[in-house]
Length: 290
Length: 290
Image (cartoon, rainbow over all chains, first blue to last red):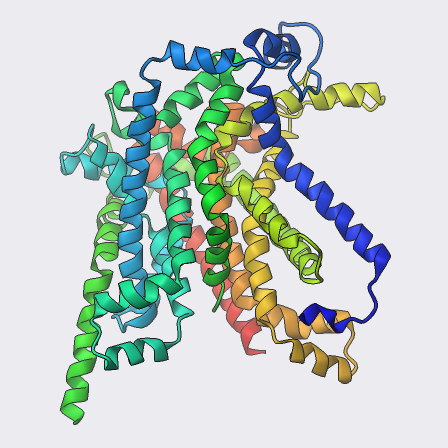
């Protein structure tokens, strides 16, 4: 409704912005669509088109090839067949990621609430520190974490993967940003009605900030689903490596299957994104409110 | 009455500490304690860290070519990448704000690369940018000289493009939410007073959006460090000099069991990020007060 202020529609400008969005949309979607389409080619077809691009000893060049010459599920078949434990790894990874994201939500909902709405000693300073820690790349904490996990006797267990990631400072910072947007009056009113802290958090705040909570879940799930460094560092037993490590290694060994592995790697995340894209956008929006 | 008030305040403080406890505990155990270990390591020599050597490790690291290269590259990547990301997404947010049919759907499309695992698209990047890849084949067919995209200095720009592709959507949505909070009346008043569109941008839009721009910069840095995964998948442990990042330095020293050098680099990174965050924070506050 607000947009109707400008009485005249500027048609050339409108056309220009449509072209701009179309271009941007294609640019954004192309890699994903390309991967999906190419995953339905047989390994021999992939070799035929891309061998020159991947292997420098081959002659010729790669060609843009979106639609398969012959629709084939051979790639999928080979991934499933070659690794009979594929499905086991899939469920194991799913379990890890859900545990990490759930932990992250628990920690960050409570922590974020405290930082947004309660007086804490050195609150500003600690929050600032959390932000700096959030910005640090994962590689920095890998070794020190190894020492800590060794001290706690947790190396080589799945807790070694779950704990450090569940406590990542990102969630707390993100949720604090979102909770800051909630008017104090709502909380005060609930308190006057005799609601306890957890009652307020679960029955009043959680429904309003659903977008934020789901965003934290989704973003930390993605991070966990993609982890490669942590398992390699913290686990000696390669049978405990999650799917992400396996998929990343296939990419380098046989390139014929890497489109298929790409699709398989993206599948659970695409599913989550399909259901929760609106909440994700909403969560990011809410985190910006002051 | 006053005593009761005092009691309530104290109880509130206590509740806050309880709520923040898991987050603070985890941060202490997995981030601060490790960091303290890092600081101790940085001043010692030997595997157990038994000899105190003062600033010798610092001198060593600063004079090493690998560290200098990594530091310069990382700063260059962050500086150019984050700035470009914010400028481009600000521009796009302005275009979306002007109103366009279907732009709501478009926002979701923009978010897709953020959640898509990089392992899913790295094959596409390779097929497109390899020496005998699709891009070079196109360049040949239109008679433009070809280039090395992944193994030459151009690798930096490919990585930059991938970073923008991934993190662009997040900042667009964040900045768009900032634009939407600004009351329309501000612009109307400014228009009555005869302000031009540039003046409106500088004196209304930018100050009102200072917190959003601050957050977009912080998240931009967070995502920029995650680009290491892309750099690693494209170039391995020793990529072309132009994309040799601080994380390569950290990882390679980890593999050589050189924890001292790693610790020095980690501390430097922490200090730089602290400095950057302080700078951004002050900038935001100055803008807001105007």
